[in-house]
Image 1 (spheres, rainbow, N blue to C red):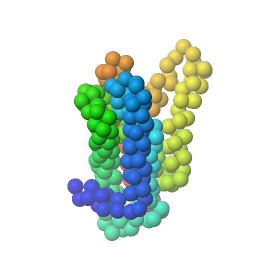
Image 2: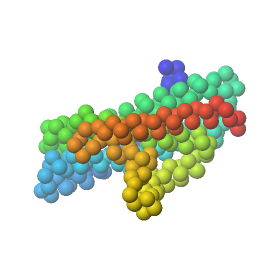
Image 3: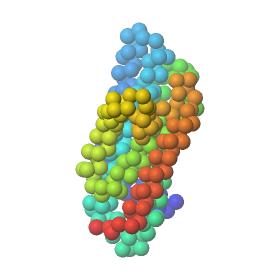
Image 4: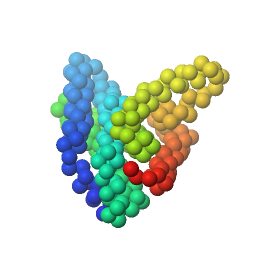
Length: 241
């Protein structure tokens, strides 16, 4: 718990407030847009379902990923990691603190999204419809997506040790994997290799019937475990510059 407390203390910097402010503004802006659609006469339950799903989309996941890249990347760019290790703060404690913070922050951003969603729905007179739209599988799938993206960002910054390169790679892969999937489909038309790419597998963890597809849950989980193990291996075995 001490490692987690240290991570929260490190958050007290302007960039943190700016990025979380952007996330909150995104939630509010998305909610207002959906409310306009509801007021235009579209089915309220359908609009609320789209609003809830839309708020946990690529934009949010990229913003959240950038937040983690900056959070860890600054440890390298500002030499705070090296100073901490010299002062006796072990690499394993540093890594554990970052990973625990990632999990807590992922739950926090999902709770913030649900709060803004319910407030927006309540303003539109659709609070009950909003509550009815929640399913255990749906909420857990959203949390899974947030954690997966955060761990991918987490992994990238330990690989590159560069904020700029990690952000470019993170954004490129989020949008570029679709192009790779099309290439695989063109090259191997009889196969479904593209479905097993990291973010594509993540997109299939809930089937059309609203239930978990455990094959893809396990595959996405295996990707996350592999990224965490690789990130720790890089931290433990490379010199801290």
